[in-house]
Amino acid sequence: MHVYTRALGKIASRYAPSRVLSFDAVHVFKALQLIENKGHVSRSLLCKELSLGEGVIKTLVKHLKMQGLIESTKSGTRMTQKGKTISLQLFSSIPVETSIPKCSVALGEFNYAVLLKQFGCTIKSGIEQRDGAVKMGGVGAPLYCLRMTYL
Image 1 (cartoon, rainbow, N blue to C red):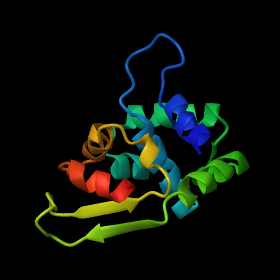
Image 2: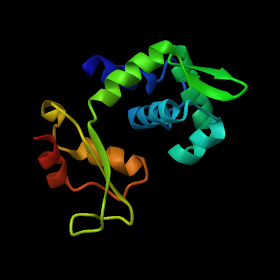
Image 3: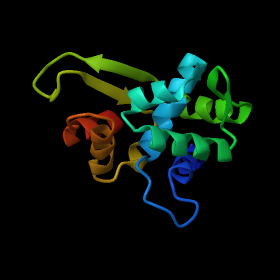
């Protein structure tokens, strides 16, 4: 599994001296999840769902193509066989995704939780996961909830 998480990081890194990228591994993961769920997606849908600009999405798609994970057609962007294999491995580690009703630990109007199996060893301080939630439009993520989820 760590091979696949490193692959997400590689996709979200610069290949040559250029501007700093405006997307990271969280955006790559969400893009793969969208493409997997929908079958094919347009750039405008990626812009809307990832809350990123057109230029950033174009670069993200380019990076995914360079790794051979997606291909573009007239009907939109779809997953290659390699992309499907990696996505299957990534998504198999997420047994539960759910919405959480408003409660004392829920900070935002819409609350969401992801349960990961056997990844407690990858959690350092929990700040990285909270930052990932914020990058995707979240208000934050309580650190004690992150630790309880991964134990």
